Amino acid sequence: MTPGSNSAAVNADNVPYAHQQSAIPLVDAKMTGSTNMKLSADDTLSFAGTRMKTAITNVRVFDGYKVTPPSTVVIDGDRIGVDSTGAYVVDGLGGVLLPGLFDAHVHLNSLSDFEAMRNWGVTTALDIACFPTTLLDLMREKAGRNGLSDCRSTGYPANFKQKSRPLEGWVTDPSQADEFVADRISKGSDYIKIVHDLLMSQDIVTALVAAAHQNEKLAIVHAVLTMSFEIAQKAGADFITHAPLDKTLDRAFIDRMVSEGQVCIPTLIMMEKIPSRGTMTTEASSDARALQYANATKSLKAMCDAGVAILAGTDANRTPFAPAHPMHGQDLHHDEMELLVDAGLKNVDALRAATILPALHFGLSDRGIIEPGNRAHLVLVAGNPLEEITATKNIQQVWINGVNWVS
Image (cartoon, rainbow, N blue to C red; front, side, top):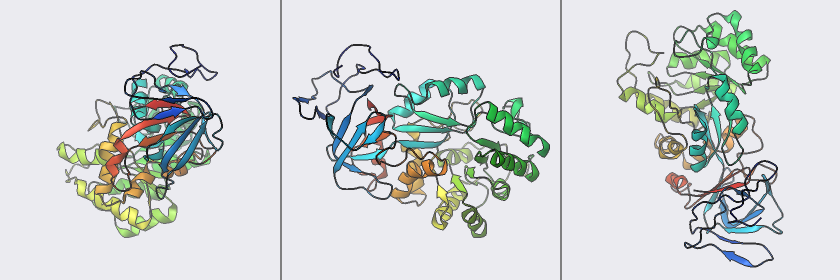
């Protein structure tokens, strides 16, 4: 089947061989050892929606630490390969090839969220609360197929009688922790989320984290106040998501996070918007303490400098009761990675926060770095994000499991 065919033929994974889409004049394509085929602005031919053996030439690779000199990367099936024989050639035009991006904190509501993420190069989404279970089941069925982004999810989180959340998630006593975690695992949760507010005691959080670990699941604690951070850290949480708005974390606390190998997903785009709304979060106490975004950024910089792993997450959602609604895919670039750099992280740290570090800490060893055998989750951008982080927005092409999508 040749690219540009109008056939609806699909392969064994139900991936269409040729999906018609408007072409853009970004690539030269040819079959190695065969007649050259050149794409131009007048062509309607597009590789979008196709999976074929591909050699991306003249491309600089972000290897997790630096951008390499121009080289060739081979896509063979759904993996990164080594042999370009018989491959179509895509000229990277000196652009930078990134591993497919992660958003380490999203809330997925529909399949359109997957399409939006795909269009912005977010090839793996880590969902941090999704309900009802039927929605999670649908997303699991579709994720990573037919050019949609892949995902992992907590399902619904543990919380202390929050009326906006499912009753099945209410945990009001440490004795309920084992049952909650077992139920989450039976429903397919990949990891366990705990929403800490001022009503949930240390004992409950500790019991939930212990139950997660006993079942070989990672535990993530939602925290926007220093007290919540302290409870999460003491409980042994693997991840603390958000950043404190009431105070700046002190060095002794941060050193304990480093020694325990705990990870922060600061979601600065959400933290920036909460104080500007003039409202208090559910975690805030009745004394109406002031919440300041500067506390979040100062804490983030101190954590990064001390060696705490920082992951990029937007808290993208379309939930009516949420304090803000970052957009899926787009706001990983337009806000979160730029805000990480504005807070004092180096460009390379922001890129690692959206690529190799989420893969490492969430145990997804088949992605996050471009090397043979890994999944062909790739994003080709014009410009060099190590020089200007906004270059990540200049997306030229995206591959998910070897399926090509032209931005």
